[in-house]
Length: 360
Image 1 (cartoon, rainbow, N blue to C red):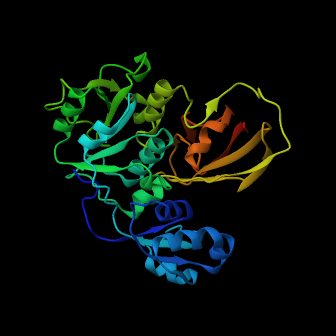
Image 2: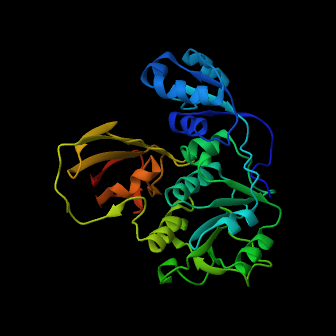
């Protein structure tokens, strides 16, 4: 039950992904490539991280990064060659080392790397102890998962196990409550009144859902009707957020309020915005500004836009994360289009607003 199913090195790319890997003591880093522009902007941090890993910083042209990485990779001027993480952790060690409160997420034959990365991001926000996958019918640690996870791959341990059902039975035996989410279940997630302190959250494959053979006595099944409407957007993120909201009292990664409840200060922070989209959704989705400078306690407004590039009406739903992950609890969400199904007609464009404030 080790955390890696392959020994093959691979390239990570993107600022958050690479910097998170460089800061992970369990990650073996081999080669670091950066452009001059990226190096100038982040010289101190890069030198410190590279020195701690015992590797040299190699300055390269954008063309070199484009040649090294897969076509269309949004590298932002940095790429890092790494080995898979070897935590040498088993699920038994995770369970035995947990305190009174613990959360483990299990993915049963989930193969879409963007979905796995999205679930890793959400898991990192709420200090999930481990993400468990089967050795068979699941992807190895790779650049696509790492990029979608935006640094969370080096925060949440990946544990590969031989038998998912036996793993769930063991966790139930040692005090965990197991909740399975499936499009064909009989109860809705909204019917859950409360969760135990130790929980296991299980999602099945994108196409077939959960395998129930041998697991019916181990799991309480709930319907994930929201996922049916999402059409390839972040498969499990909405129910996963709902579970964490109920279990922790947070509204997603940020707190939800109806209006500003604290006074603004003179201390300013810069909030950056980005937007990613699943490759098989025919939309363009972007933030209308790269960042805003706001005073702590001051209400602020940000706009995103989406455009349907196809010849057919289509539906989508946005989910969000705050990075660094520890900063999420300081953001208050006043109004947002997230977690609401949006429909766009062919070739049409629409703007969406998000109102938020940052508290100290």
